[in-house]
Length: 187
Image (tube, rainbow, N blue to C red; front, side, top):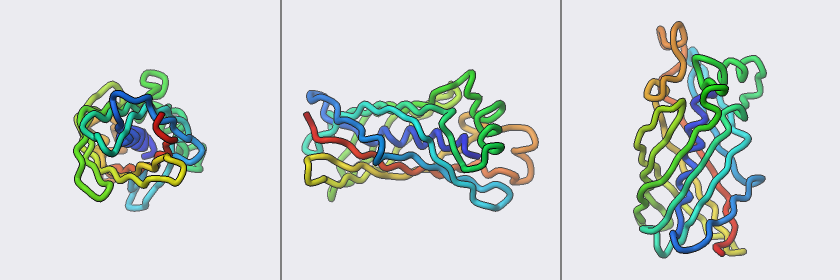
């Protein structure tokens, strides 16, 4: 369910940056991490409202880029209070035991045309897996950058959900995550 959205937070990692410059400031009001999962064949979408990011990104030197994103699991919202309460409780995201999901980049590779491949570690519910994310950047007139992308995780990889929710396709194992990170100018 929404719990899968936290993985989206990892997506934020895509904002990798130059290791010798100061991190670009995240413009939270213009940034978001969204997720979508099928529940009984119906798409359920949500968003994480609170996340932090430390992103060093110089498109001219992607090989020295670095990103670290932390998502507040309790900030999950689908627009349905009851569903949100279930999604952040056990056996889903378990916000009391695992209040944060995180992503830390380990490598970024330029693919051309403002497109990158970002590798890193995504941690949800204390379980860490290496993932690879596509990232696209859009330079802004003020020197800032918008980084966006999407990826899919399997909730079973992170022990999200369980019991009856895993039977008969009640909630799909795959969770789609997308992100848009607005970043200030490099300093």
